[in-house]
Image (tube, rainbow, N blue to C red; front, side):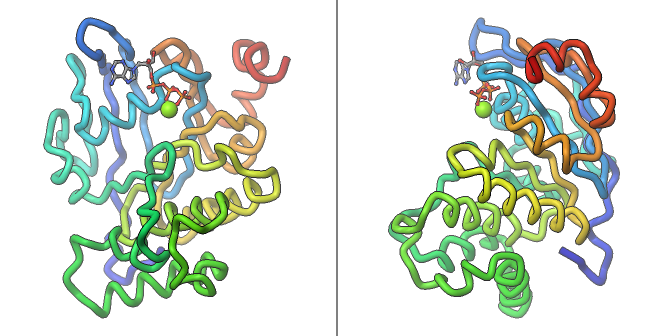
Length: 244
Ligand SMILES: Nc1ncnc2c1ncn2[C@@H]1O[C@H](COP(=O)(O)OP(=O)(O)OP(=O)(O)O)[C@@H](O)[C@H]1O
Ligand SMILES: [Mg+2]
């Protein structure tokens, strides 16, 4: 989303050598990544590789045991989640977590709870409805009665309602038909073009590499590859794991 004040420009998200564990079980080892403004950066990896754990670390939900995370020029390692979100990172979690008993519009408004200005909220709502005309038509429908694809739109829209600098999306295409995946990926591309950087966690390798500007591959908690989509497609490990 564009913003006249240029607030969507930011210094990168730097993840520097982090180690993350749940109790004694180590999940991430020495993970480093750079997520830059103006780009879609993707994170690929099999089930259990540690993708969602990496997001939890960035959001301060499972702070790293070692290493550091910086966003927009500030060290956010171990900072409380609300402070990290307040710096301009929004996350659409795995499984979407919409509020089923609330309307589509009420769900969207939940994403702007930190914003006081009614005018700004209305403008953001109109932007989201511009991206997802289907949601505009169905704004009064209970979210729990919407189709899976529509619920995915609600969750992405809700993430945008805080006008984040960086939007993290954990597996948006899970459970969607190929046509809906295409539609949502087209919108993710547009979100990036309009000024919001995207960190896209996916297992849908072909389509993700088609829209991403840069990508990383996580395997058993380690970064095993990083590069441009064309480079990743040629990478031996990626080919073996995903392209047979
Ligand atoms: N709260 C937790 N307590 C203990 N272990 C956990 C916890 N959350 C995740 N794990 C373990 O950490 C590892 C990485 O899980 P994670 O959810 O990060 O994987 P993922 O790459 O997101 O997988 P998926 O593609 O299936 O979503 C898994 O072995 C998982 O069982
Ligand atoms: Mg996950």
